Length: 422
Ligand code: PGA
Ligand code: ZN
Image 1 (cartoon, protein in one colour):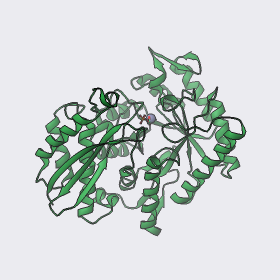
Image 2 (cartoon, helix red, strand yellow; image 1 turned 135 degrees about the vertical axis):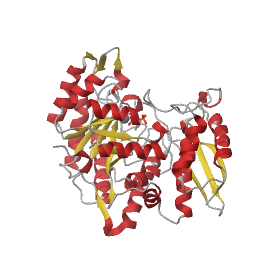
Image 3 (cartoon, rainbow, N blue to C red; image 1 turned 180 degrees about the vertical axis):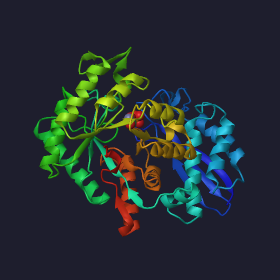
């Protein structure tokens, strides 16, 4: 099936800032689209998100990227939409830079995802099944990922005063995905009541989690403990995304008003993990502070150590991380890299090396639910898509509910599959 047309338009994301919505029309008339997300705590090793840097939208317009989609259209017109790897390769060659600085990773990714979606429609297959076929993935079952829901927001996503960016609940003990989502929603609303009772704000951050003004991180954990117990889920686990590159400066970490070495910060994290049911810690250190990661990986025992800014969904950085034993899990973000084919390669490289994989949204999101299908296609075992609130976050969870219903008894819930450590 041939690609006959590619059109891209500027639309707004969940922060009200421009992003691309790209449509692909096929020779049989099939028309499908995809939208790309955008980060705020963006790592320095990520592929380039091309912004206009002109007056409109405070420099954040994406009209240049949209223009580049017309260049991509010329290169992809009449190509077979079912050959995703060839499409992605052609775009990478057209760009011909390491970090997609010429065309923009946002331009390229919008086409890459729209092509896969159009192909799945033309093949009359749900996207998650189509992806398995298109990439010849040898997965046996269909595993619904365990959601990691960020219900207290800090760092650059909120003005709560917390250094740690995300406090997540992880419902690993539930029997099904829908029960896990229900439990999480109940905890979220119970937390809201607890915040109100304590005179704390219930305003929310970029990913739908609450952003109460707290003095210490310990207070946040205590609130989570209260909320999970009061909601009737005392066994629920927690996860953190420290996004530590944001509070690192010249070899030190500025945490809770103190200037800390990586060893001192490691001790604080280890204490948190001893006192609270934390099963996963993302970006505990700066993205190039490899010695800190190696040190902590040795100390942390059973905790999942996740590389987000560290790996930037980049194959070379992942290989280096595997060699240096810097982390035991990888966060996968499509727009850190820019094509679907390259992303799937990174997922399988990680899996082969024994790292667990977490498919992730960005803080700036859209109603596109592509990552839900991707998580099931590759059996990632976990997905990070924000709080159980706000439609751009719920689009992903609701799509997973739909997939779960469609699979019926064939749907397996991942539970703690992504967090099991010997
Ligand atoms: P970002 O945050 O999308 O702002 O980078 C998400 C994360 O750090 O995981
Ligand atoms: Zn992160």
